[in-house]
Length: 392
Image (cartoon, rainbow, N blue to C red; front, top):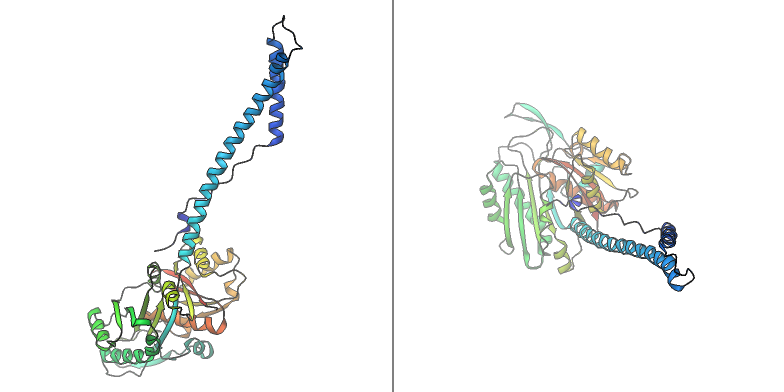
C-alpha cells in the first residue's frame, strides 16, 4: 500500500523556557508590592524593627513571587516533557514508515526476447537508437511502424507464444537453478489476446516440474509498475518470477513486441540466503499534483539533488512530464541536465510489457553507469521509482 508520511500528525514546537530576566523583575515587583501592603496594613502599635515585621514585609512577598516562578517552571517542564514524548513517537512512526518505504526488490535474474536484443538491451538502445520499422500488413492493408520479433506470418498467436515462452525459460534456467529449493511465485501479465485460463494452461504445460510454484497469477489489468507496491509489503522471504508478454494479434502502430521475465526477491529472502542482487528496485509512487508524492519517491530511492542519475520515460504525456519537472526543480533537482531516454522513441511502446522492459533498461544502465536510474511511467496512473546498483 502507498506510504503516506503526511498521515503522521505534525511535530509540536518546544515550549518557551521562562525568561530569567522577566521573572526576576516579577519577583522584585512582588516583593515591592508586598512590602507596600505590609507597611500599609501594619498595626501602628507594633514595632517595625522586629523579625516578624521583616518576615511579613520582605520574606513573604519574595517567597510568593519565587513560588509563582516555580509553578511556571513546573508547567513548562511538564509541557516540555509531554511534547518531547509526542515528538519522539512522531520520529519513531516517521522512521518506521521511511524504513517500510525504502524496502526494495532485489533483481536476481532476468531473461528477455525483444526485436532489438536478447542481451544488453539498454546498451543497444542507447548506441543504435530506434529500431521501429515500417511493415506492410496484408490483413490490415496498410503500413504500420512497429518492432516485431519475427516477420509477419500465418503462425498462430498461441504457437508463437508457446515458442517464445519455451525459449525464455531456457534462457532463465541458470537463474532459476540458483533459487534455493526452487520455490517461488509466478506473475504473468499479458496483452489479453488469449484468455487467462489459456495462458495459464500454456505456462503450466511447459514449466519444469522440478520447480515448486507457491502461486500463479495471470492478469491483463495492471498499472505498469504499481504491482510492486503491495508486493513489497509482504515482509516475508519471498521470490517472484514476473513474466510480461506483449505479442501482436493485431499490430499496433509504434508498439514493440517482447516476452520478458524478471526474478525478484524480497530483502528478507536476500538476507536469509545471503544472495547479492544486481540492483535494488525501490518502491513505486503514484505521482499527483501533491509535490510530496515525488519527494517521497526520491526519499525511498535515496537520490539527492547533487547526485548524478539517469531518467527513463515511457508513455508519459507532455503535461504530466511538465508538472513533474516543475516539482523536482522546486526541490533543487535538475532533470533536464541529466541523461534522459524515452523508451517510446528508442524501443517503441512496450504495451503490456511496460513494467519489465523499463526495469530491464534501467537495471542494465544502472549497472554499467553506476548511477541510480529514475523511471517515469504512465499507464492508468503516472508513477515513478528509482533503480539503483547495489554496492558491496
